[in-house]
Length: 174
View 1 (cartoon, helix red, strand yellow):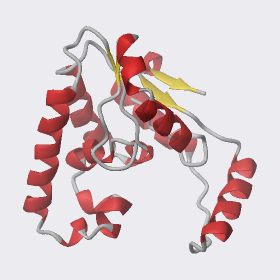
View 2 (cartoon, helix red, strand yellow; view 1 turned 90 degrees about the vertical axis):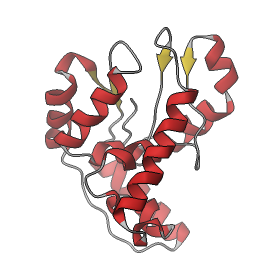
View 3 (cartoon, helix red, strand yellow; view 1 turned 45 degrees about the vertical axis):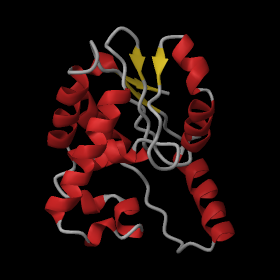
């Protein structure tokens, strides 16, 4: 489970994995076909207590749907993913920056779902020096004309949450 952090190469990793899906499959790595973009945001959305928290759901208008309808759509997407996923003999690889934002309870539900598909769960987290992150994020926001607001991450709090759910030995930080 790649939980990202923005500005750590997540998009490049996801694009490469999407382009190389067939090659990865030959190596025993299943990167399920993303339904939207190159990531697995709908998996995260399905486990959120409030799925309107995901920016994509807000930007696409999905957040204005009744929550029960949004949940039904997410559950249908999970069923689609399940049908595409590994039989438990290979490695399942999911990636979305928003996974890092899930609460401990939401991660616990995600972990149970994943353990129904695979033997164990390892979490890969890439982090970036906060000063380098700020410079990169500012540059991107200026280039894209997006509002300029940079929030520094509390790596300690978010990584501790992941370690409590998945176990310290299963959270790999790079």
